[in-house]
Image (cartoon, rainbow, N blue to C red; front, side):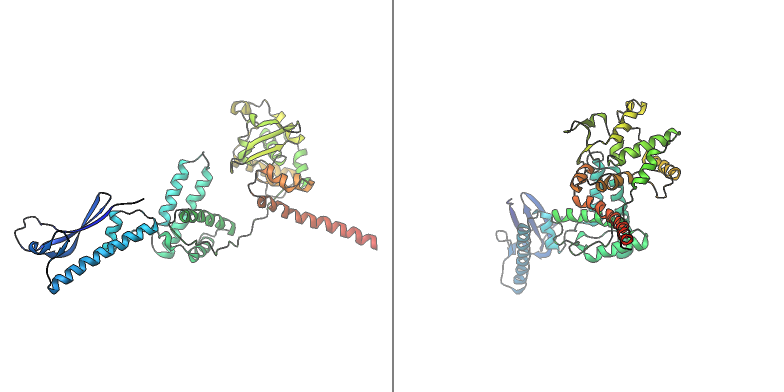
Length: 407
C-alpha cells in the first residue's frame, strides 16, 4: 500500500519572541498525520529560505548547518525505504524514532504469552479446555521465574530467544522445580507454540528450536492383562458406587473412550453401524476428531443396564459417570479387592482397549487408531511397542517348549 511521505524544515517562532535566531523544527508527514521535532539548531529569519528549507549563505557555519539538515533528511529517506522493503507499517512515530536514534521496542516474550492465554480463556468450551489453559498458565509462571533468575529481568524481547534459552529453561525446570523430563517437555512444547506464532507473524526470522531435540522418553503405558480384566469383570460388588465405577471402567476398556468422552456420551451418539450392530458415533473432546466404534457385547450389556438410571435420564447421558477424582479413588479400592497390584487409574481403560482388547487380538493398528480417534498413527504405535514385551514373553515360553522336546 502506497503512503504519502513529506519532510519539511521550518523556523518556529517561540512565545514572547522579539528578535534574533529562531529554532529550526522538522515536520514529518505521513498520509496527513504529522509529527514535529526540534533539530537543536537555530537560524536568523532573514537568512532562512522557506522554499528550500535551508539557511542562505556561504559562510562555514551556515554550510555546516545545512549539511546537518541534509543528513537528517537522508536518515529519514533511508528509514522510509527500510520500512517499505520490510513491509512494515510506515508511521510518523517510526520515522521520528529513526531521527532520534531510538528503536521501536521489540515484542516481549511474556507479553505475547499473556495475550495468547487471554485469547485461549475467551475460547474455553469452544476448542479449548480449562486443563489446556491451566498448562499454559503454569508454563508462563515457570518462564517468568526462569527469566527473573537467569536474566535478572522481568521479561525479555522475543528476538533474544535462542537455542541456549531453550536448553537452559529445560534444565531450570528439572533442577529448580524437580520436574520430570516428560513434564518439562510439555512446558517446552507450550513455549514452542508461542515461538511458531512469532515466526508466522514475522516477529522473529530465526527459529530457536531449529537445533533443539527433547531427550524425554515416552512413559511406558500401563494396561491390564486379560487375566486382570477378567478379575474385575467377574467380581461382584454390593456397594453401588463401586459397582457403577466398575461398569463405567469396563465400558471404556471395551470401547477405548477417555474419561471426558464417556462422561459426555449422549444417547443420540449411539446408532446402527454398517454391519447392523450398535456403534458409537462421537467426537473426541480433546481433539474434536470423530470416533466410530462398533460395540462389543459386554459394552452393550453395560449400556442396557443403565438405560433407565435416574442420573442418565436427567442428564441425557448413557452412563452415571462420577468426577474423575472420585473414579480414580474408587478404582484403587476395586484394584485392592481384585488383587491387582498396578496403580489403577481411569485412563488405563483406554490403554487396555488399545492393547489387550484390540491389538493383542489381531485388530490392525490402523483400525485401532481410527477407533481411538488418534490424529496421528505414531500415537497408536506406542501401544504396539508395548506389546513387544508380550511377544518376547510368549516367545520365551515357546523356546522352553522346544528346549524340552530336544532333551
